Image 1 (cartoon, rainbow, N blue to C red):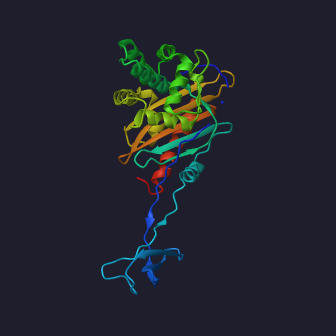
Image 2 (cartoon, rainbow, N blue to C red):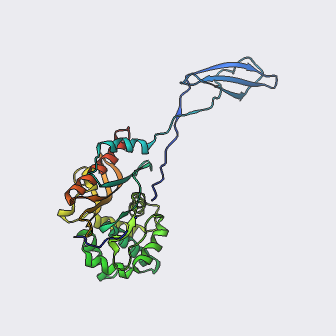
Image 3 (tube, helix red, strand yellow):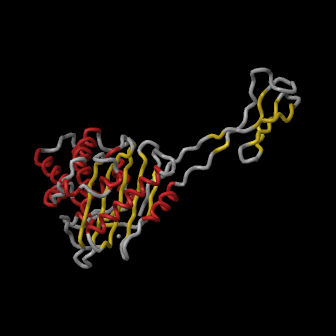
Length: 319
């Protein structure tokens, strides 16, 4: 179990959209200047006219085989954040609970986020701790020791807290985590005080950025380091296989969950991050929540948010 004491609270992933060219319905020749330039009027699908010009001989129309040039018209881009917000209408947190979710379509590179603010990481920070350890080992041109690997395995697969505390010390605690996160591109995450790694504060957007470091090719982590961490996230203990995996096809997921009962309020922080595969298509998802009255309630909330996040891409015509 994840247990730390209270303390207490930005960023979203960059959304990338593609621009498509639409087909022009008709082209009408307007005239020719003495300089030999053909002026062409084109009517787009919305009835608006465009004017373009093309070099030509001083004749009334283009010669056989020639096509007058027209400027492409841009299709409106998809507002992924709006689609996600619409999908999240079906997700209803209990009174006092809060949820934030971020998702990235690995193939297209498009992303979306819902909700804001910072959350306690609880045990999802263990992915960040191991990523930091691997980055430091790379910098020192060394491999992890047998003891470090043993700690890493139990920390990720079983969410063992003692192992996390040992590796937290090995990376230099919050200072080491924060330095690595600066290189990873996290801007709204700050390591917990002293031994309280579970009270590291973060955002859903930052956790999506971290997942890109773990699962993407454009990463500070070497391929071997990414493969190692991905492998551990794919072997989570049976009782901990909940969260973002609810949005996956069968067993096609790699994740890390975090759960933390707050001693002052009795309420639960429940988080889940990872990669899921749906219809052969990969998504990175980070779902964070706090203020849940029970652990089960929090798990249901992050699972519903994860399903809504992936569904916002699939239902809008994405794969």
